[in-house]
Structures are given as structure tokens and as C-alpha cells.
Image 1 (cartoon, rainbow, N blue to C red):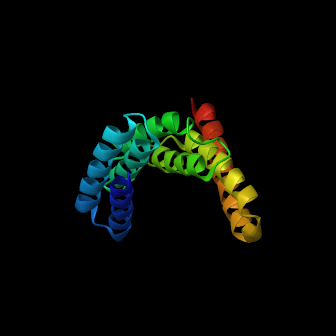
Image 2 (image 1 turned 120 degrees about the vertical axis):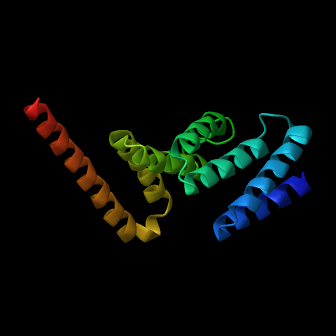
Image 3 (image 1 turned 135 degrees about the horizontal axis):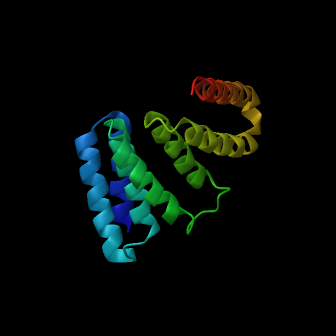
Length: 154
């Protein structure tokens, strides 16, 4: 498991540094080890899947990334509660992919849930959260106005 953890850490670093090819290789190698040692549905495998989904997102493959993020979300709940950083990281990722896919209302709903969580956890940084919250509310209002205009024109 130590080898898998090390490979996963290196994959994360490569992803953050933009070395997508090496990151994908390392996520895959780590996932194979986790599967052999802990089983297909282990936390380690899910963490690797999350990393690969982040790579797909960075490559602009939003449909594929969204599908993998949804899979991670369905598995993550077995390891973490909805009130965990990990679960809300997946919510945030789903918000981003849904936004890119044009599912604006769903994206805003997910972002709102994640933002509420992070606002509770990181109370010391309330100013930044308040700014983000205002921007989120503005986007929701713009979508409502757009929906109303679309209904009127029909």
C-alpha cells in the first residue's frame, strides 16, 4: 500500500505541474496496486479515479470527466460523509463540469452546497466566501431572468 500511496502522491504532483501523461500513468499504476491489495471498491481506487477525472477535465473532456466524477461521488459516500472536505471537493468538481457542459442550474446548486460547507469549515476566511457567495447568487439571478425571458418569448 505504501507504494500505491507514493505513486498516488507523485501523480497528484505531476497533475498539478501539468505533466498529464505521467500523471495518468502514475494514477493507473497506483490504482492497479490498490485493486490487488484492497479490492476494486477501495478508497485508494476511488482516489485514483478522482485524479483521472481531474486530468480529463483539464484536457477539456468534460463529458468523460463528469461521468467519472459522478462515479466517484457514488463511491465516496461509503468512505466520507456529505460533511467532509473530500465529498465537497467532488461536488465542486461536478459544479465545474456541469457549468462547462451548460447545465448551469445544476452547477449552481452543486456550487452552493459546496460553498456552504466550505464556508462553515473555513470561517476565518469569511470575506472571500462572502464574495464568492455574492457571485453565485448573481449567477442564479441571471439564470432566472434568462428563464423568464425565454418563457415570455415562447
